[in-house]
Image (tube, rainbow, N blue to C red; front, side):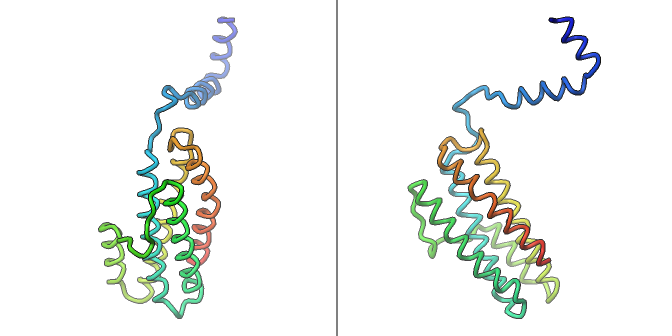
Length: 175
């Protein structure tokens, strides 16, 4: 048996190496060791969606741009719903109307507002794509086997991924 494995390794070292990496990646040393507490995930989801609402408000300023103006209302509704859902799921009720924008996000928007005309539109779309990618990454991490400990929250995060990817795709098409 050992001879067969050594022979296989000599003939296909890359395949065997990849197989070993795959097997070790699938093994979880500590079944209780999750990377993200549910409360942290919920806080970040709320924060990122408050930022999405602020970006939607910026889109509303571009009334002459039908695509962005229409997208603004949709994004605002989605983000408010995300906040309600995660707040209810984690028993941390948040009043959507009383949430404040994180300082870093405020700075991004203030910087955006200094841009003239077409640069403002381009900057807004870049911020939207970045925000969408951050939300996707957050939900991918949370829904992974090492994400959040609560299976229902992992499933919720995984269930939101198609919508988040659709949102990113929509903004990329508008660009």
